[in-house]
Length: 238
Image 1 (cartoon, rainbow, N blue to C red):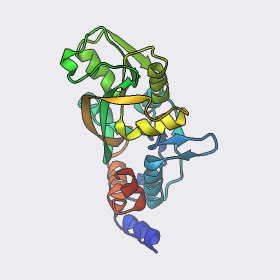
Image 2 (image 1 turned 180 degrees about the horizontal axis):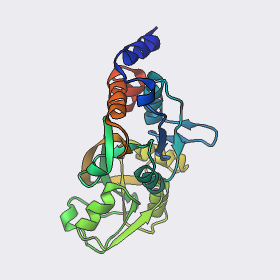
Image 3 (image 1 turned 30 degrees about the vertical axis):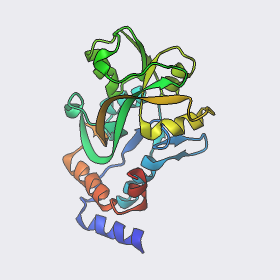
């Protein structure tokens, strides 16, 4: 009865069908938020977006792509959206936003064999080698701080592999996803360790193409609000 009730409540206040067009959703392989296991797309954020799609009577259109490629598609293509996207000042006017879906923290991480202690980003050598995923906010943050050797990768898995192979000294990572990524790489979960340097905390949203009508954005925001007592929302924010 509960899913039916959610659906009825949602459609009591949502715009007509023609005002909520089919949206093509993109995300990246980033366990536990989104997982591409070759046969289906799984994950905590995927479950929540699917919940919202059901509330709006929309089909499942979620696809996995590398982050930078998906980001560019949503910038260009109407009726498209990208999740989970950090809502930053630099991105604010580029998209229309629904959320937040959850919060995340980004830290610097080191190889377990590295005996150095990293406590203060302002004391790091600007020539230290750091890997980050292309297009993530930490890329701009580290560039702004003047670091000279930032290795850009296409996926979080590739970022982790740069450190596992000791091609870089540090990487940016989410403590919330690090364990899952190591498991995905069949790597011991203590192979990479958090430093004491946190780069930022951020709220994560669905970023819609900027041409999306405001009424459509309002409909998706209502669907999110109606989902906040659901299993999908609670698991993503646990």
